[in-house]
Length: 347
Image (cartoon, rainbow, N blue to C red):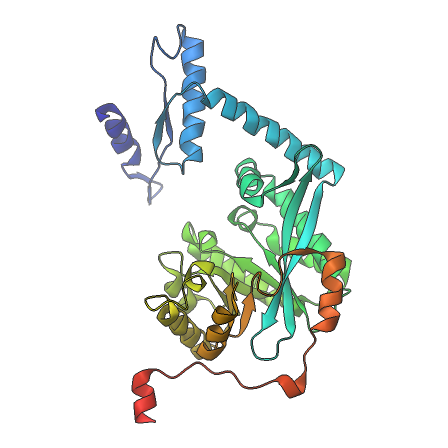
């Protein structure tokens, strides 16, 4: 499509504005006459539908109109209306997935995860409704509700168990995140040191200087900051130099094949060593087998999270686990990153 290429080239050309270089981009929807409409209103409507399809495909691309797009958009709009109603009716729930120390086998914290129980469809996957909530801005309201609800629940837990809450890029850029965190802490009585905010690299990419300033503000409140899905972005290492994260969460894609001969154990080991040098905790996500757990312990990883120990559970089902898996001093044994082969030879 030469015309689309020319349009993208024109839109993406940088320009100067008040002494700053500014760049723009676009998602393009295309409808053709006469097959996609016999009048201008219908063609514009179908081009608009194709544009939304381009956005859903990851933005910065183009899509041609297809007849089934209208049904997809109608379904999306219906889901959006249901999502808004769920905020009014209290249709959301918070589930908690525990994080287990690989050193003491005690629960060190729980990650709060939002769940939506639709009145007709039952449980709807977060993978379906969270992106929609982010696109519509509803994630700000949902995220605030999760934070407030989870803080009140965590205030009833043993004092050494932390609460982890995910923060989306939309919430992060709202400009009010620190205030909402302080409000949730004040309403619940939960100590700031027991709260851990999990962010992904997407929070930092667009305006990392402003994002780092917000992170420092949050640290000043006393909450901990974890870099989630570590290793899946393209500049994760550079962010470790620029901000003192308290925790690195190693993405499940590195855990799945960690025990394979050509697997990612060397990558996990490198991350663990980097974290240890910078006094950061490491948590392995998506641990599902005992072999994975044992290898992570050998590599010196601090914590594990995954279905091997527990799937996300409602608050009432998590409380008995928190009482059962408490720190046991006699079970503790030091866990240090495994020495590299060259270090072992020289030791």
